[in-house]
Image (cartoon, one colour):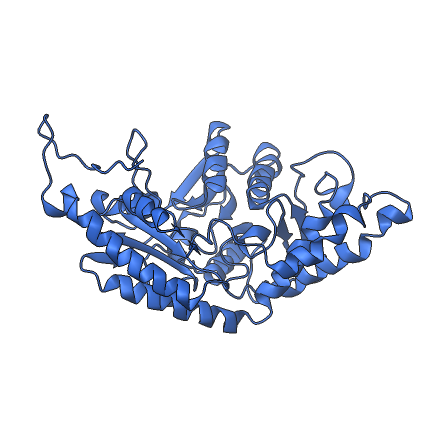
Length: 404
């Protein structure tokens, strides 16, 4: 049996999405910016996709939703344009974000720091959540943007977006949220809270890769990242990825149609898997279930290297992931685990299991059996679980398992 439990990395494209996309490759293939009928033939499908995204997110008519290539582009767009609009051409010089953002936020912030922007990286609490009062205390009259993820890709923990949004609104500071792990997994209602920009990516909710979007509240001004033609109202140049946009519309509609019901089903399977793994001694799951996306588990198993566990699961045809890179020279621990205060050893043992609506009960049964066997096997040969062996130099070696 092959089991895919890495749905926070990407998801299978729903066959209904593939079906919706197919006509736009070889039948209705004109450039939507062309003036002839072959070009304009795709306009109804693009309009429908835009409506599907608006409906799924309960965006207001005054808001703008611009299709991009992915959330990495959307994230870069907001951060870099805030720099151009409010730092280079304004009197601001400060951005507030967190220590645990996706690399597309953190790397862009590092780049902006090189340009002279001051960036505050907020810590998370032991639950892996950013506390709203922390955000409030770091906003100054020089703050150009607050950017805080809606839900964590690693832990699934959900940040208090409504509360942070109110703080930003009160302070008059634009608020961006990378909502990649929230859209399609939990209800996202953009009229019930205040957020200026959200980024999303279709391939995280059973849509195609290579298409995402940026939501812009009240269609506010934002310098373009991509210059060229007058696509997307001049906001984002580049010929529209019609098939991708159609696929994203269909995917978000399917993912949000009965979101509470679908989430409950996924949560039940996730909880059963989590409970079974927690029966093993010396295991630890990050974050409270009730404030976590319904599909995610980040689990730490004492004495078991993340990389060794992945190797064993992979041999059993189970796809999962880890934040640890034991094979790297500097033995980097999982940054999220360190941020929540796990000790260095635990931070090397994180395994992320992320389910989808296509995950079956049989796959969960199979995973439970294989996972428990793998822990027994790996603990039997683990130096850190039995006794930590000092190396020739006398220091304890942190990472002894190298499976290739």
